Image (cartoon, rainbow, N blue to C red; front, side, top):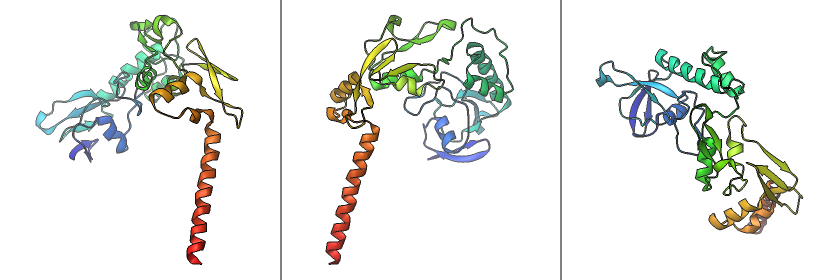
Length: 262
């Protein structure tokens, strides 16, 4: 373990551990729109930037992205210095120019006293903040069905050639983890539509409710070695079956206790 200082408070960390992780564990906050615990750090939004120094640096300081910066002994960190605040404001002005109507961006900008971007707004704004959480999770799932494409104001999340992605399984990992709900999907009874692709849903025979897409179930059976019959039940049916099993265990335990006491 090593000691580092955050806003004047001494905390312990593992050498090489990313600074944002240490900060969050010890209750220090920093905005981090592109951070997600399920995937590797990305450093895309630049909002988790902090100011660092060390005694041997003799007053020299630097600004670093905390989600990607590995800590080392005697590190001194300031999470809300004047330099940090100015950098975050610059980033928020840029984000607000791209996403002027996105609630998450507007709320965060307001915390720093920004109501309107000083930069020209894009012609056709949307709610995609380019955090790449969706594409990174899709990659981690093993699909890589979508990616960030183009440059500048034209940068966007899209499937190859903006056509229905052949590798998408309709798992919704992208949509359900999108921090601004930009990625849309529709469930219509026993079908699901996302990224211009329609999927057949499996049905829970006990409740009649849809569970997951047939394509996703087939993928998990093949690549995650999960029994195919597992996907025939929804969450509610699984919970009921688990409760019944625990009830049987409790009954067995009571019977054993009675026999021992007898």
